Length: 384
Image 1: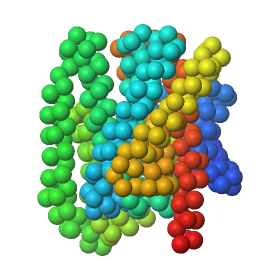
Image 2: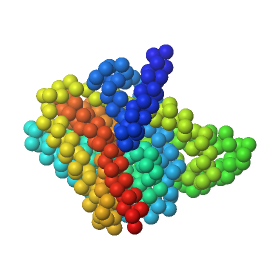
Image 3: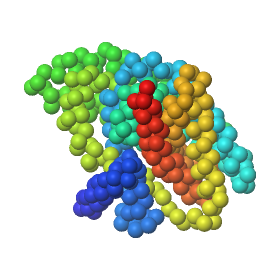
Image 4: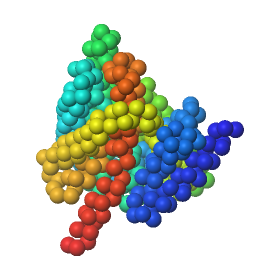
């Protein structure tokens, strides 16, 4: 019963906060994250994280990335592999160096400072995806590059984290095994998307079988997500590739009309609120300068690194900044990485709150910054 009440509060609160954000000219996702901080342990303490809410939150981000895949043009995605790799690489290098320097300057050991750099390399484009969708910016070269870069970023970040854990835990983790698992995952998923799913979709696009098509889509999303996690990759990558299998105009329309509304009300809001629920102000003022500097460095290094990567591969002007900003949000990826680091002694408890707050700051600043620069980009295009 408690879960039902919590869900009711979250749904109402996010709807209300999202509407206020929209009236203020901001993406609704910004209001939904902020209301999570307000109703969570940091301020009012009405909602606390529990396993059931975590499950709803995980399903929320999985379905969000699934529909990002559904709305992605595969040709644009493959066409922008080179810029995506460039953006991912430079978007890892700059934050890693920035995080290490900040950690060193605040008295962290070399191991802790390196891990702080690893946390800042993370990217969670789920926030940017929702903002792109609200601003009708999904089917663009910039969004395709960002989505491709997020996949590459996840792979690079996982390898770096594995190396770090291998060194600190005495070599229990095989980097080769991780690479092999990733290759197997992508090979199986791409073959399934090419040979299996299209045949099933063709059979199920008949009017009387629309419900079966929906079942196929949801099952594919969940199976791909589980398979990705089992192979050591973020489950949202699996969800995104599941979505790519359903980009056919007929299937995408059916899914967006019959599935997306329910998911947008029930699951996705819980994910955005859950980010706010992670915030705690315990020890905030003891590390106020670390929080401020770390937040600024986390935002600036990602923008600069990703923008330079975009610039190297042909993007110019506002487009480079849009790509850089879209990569800023660390979201759930960095939260998970931080918890892994804490559990394995890669940094101490006293630094957990500053890191979590900095992660949330990167997540909060992404939607309004994207709103500003996407609006400028559209205005510039309309004036031509």
